[in-house]
Length: 113
Length: 113
DNA sequence: ATAATTTATCGCAAATATACGATAAATAGA
DNA sequence: TCTATTTATCGTATATTTGCGATAAATTAT
Image 1: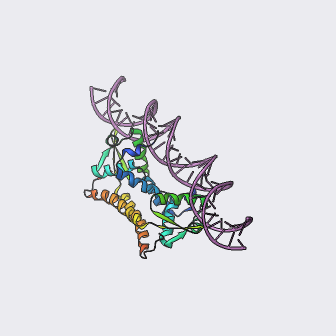
Image 2: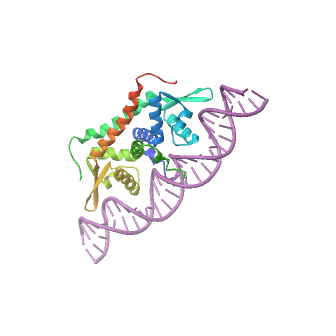
Image 3: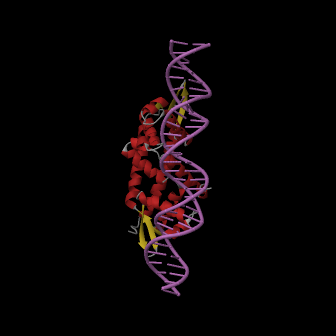
């Protein structure tokens, strides 16, 4: 039972935390950058560009797809991945809302140090 | 040995991924919001505002402190926490740079769907 | 039909993360 | 001094993540 306490927090915080978790591995950040650069990319080419085994890359792709940040289309044997712009922009908004929401509170220069 | 592959990625991606990992738990997001709201806050008050045991909150505070996002000052028996604005703003810049760096590549409306 | 290619998934091992109770350490108050 | 308060840390249990090889499934090429 050492878990599941996440559900005791607000939906908003849970959603953002889940997105941040997807971004918490450099391989997944690298995949997003590669897809932004190449517009679209066959899975094998991503594997070729990352220092990880094929099965590991496939797992990272799965997490990114689950989070809605990328999508894959079957092209014969191959699978062509690309960014899901709609959700990338949602990610942008949610993170910016959170951080700027914090920074807006700064107005007074209070600090305990 | 099932790990440590993170070091095969660029410093930039590693740094951002590490920050995202700190933000990947709703408790830590909630702590940041609480500190932004209250400007500064005794540890016990944070515990009071979170659905977690004292020792668990202490661990989350430790991670936030390690990442430089908060700082604590001893006030007698109590410890007063507050945000480290400098690094909060760095976090803001790094995340915005990353995401907007991706969104900038959108220009052509390519999509594989 | 058979072989080669591509990718997802399974099973496993190891590393990390989460959560808590118990305890230690330090200070304040009686 | 003795007690209460506050917080960090330790130990432990459990869950999750990371990573890989092996294999399965599907498609293309021979």
